[in-house]
Length: 297
Image (cartoon, rainbow, N blue to C red; front, side):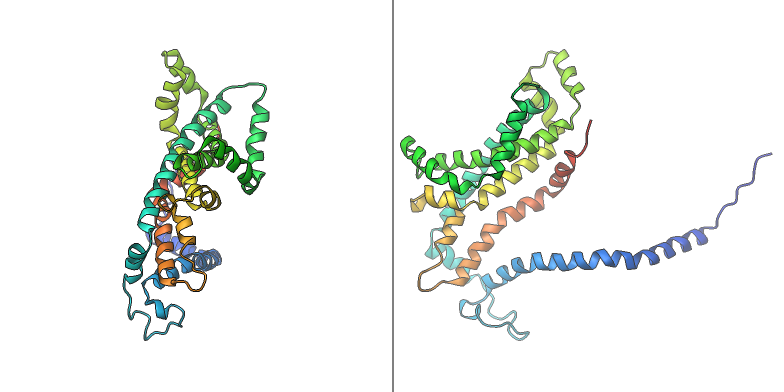
């Protein structure tokens, strides 16, 4: 005789779930309140920068009250930024340098990461240590030797020289990240593709790359942001006004005897916009890429 199972009424189950949610609320608040405070601290400077760029320049240094919080807001600072400065030229310069440099960095890191992930050779531990050691070296100490070296090669005051520097700076970390992503891909896929007659380049482009695409996006965005935020090399290597990047252009907006803070805030908003758009459009890929390296075969 089959055993009779007791079926709990739906109302009782719903009541238990409601009670469970009620009991979790105090615990959730312990995490949500600090998270909200940290989020406010991070977001507030960005909001204040955007708000200041819209305020009249004579009111930026004054206090804000409920009566004048929305009074006089306009795009005048942005108009003066493009009319009175060469900022309209700086933006395309930075985008070109960072996009080209990021593509080259990703290509090199994928190939180097594949070699470190799939092949065994005697110098492999030395190469890994060298890649890590480059991240411990302050890049400021390289300015003088690189400047003299590029002067001999006539690469100063050119986008090509700056791109080479940016690729050299970002490739070691990108290679380490890419190696971790490639280690998560089973080697049996490589072996199956090689049995079918695929070359190493075919394995990388048609088998491996689609599987580690989130990691490739993560590496590309990381390299792009590092290049976009870099100031020192761009300031020293680029002397022509028509070749300056965004960060160098913003530094030039600060005058010796006075500064138009409305224009500075407008330039800062536009300088932050590309990275904000990147994170907004690729956040799912970035999250997937950050967790992909933690999965082992």
